[in-house]
Length: 210
Image 1 (cartoon, one colour):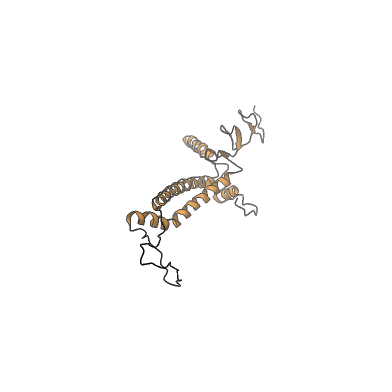
Image 2: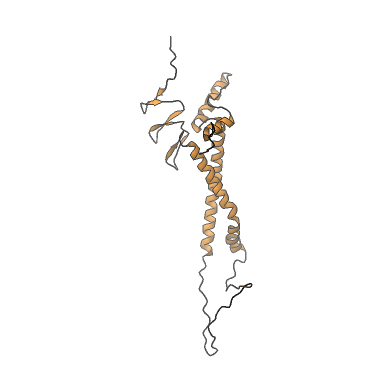
């Protein structure tokens, strides 16, 4: 006859330490992470209970930042890349001021000499600018697509009340129970609205989202 032990926790076989529910051992960090989502190689840190919301907001803000750069960089790219490559480009010369002009003193011209007014030497760096703008466009576009997709993926998991690891576990459990004609219910799914409130920590009158 078995005895049910309430509020019991398992023991991690690698850490030899208590392992609460939704805790997983990270082989990279070599420790257990509470509500572990994944180990991020770009940040070299585990994403879990204490920093998941900050990781998510970081992705959202970076996505919005790259979108901002792309929107307001269209005019610059059009002038510096498109017009310079396929259009007439800039016409080099001395600037002329039409309205509110001022008298610019010019040295006295001597007709008996061949001296000409000095023209400021200008280096053509348009090719370097075009390469820099093109490189920035590829970087921003790639970062926007990747981070927007990743943010959408995490948004769906947050709405379902699960982490990346739990998403695979729940999918496998759903298939296993479906074969036995039994439904599977995520015990940590409290509804979309409540799941977001729990994730962002804005419940109980707290309006902070980070």
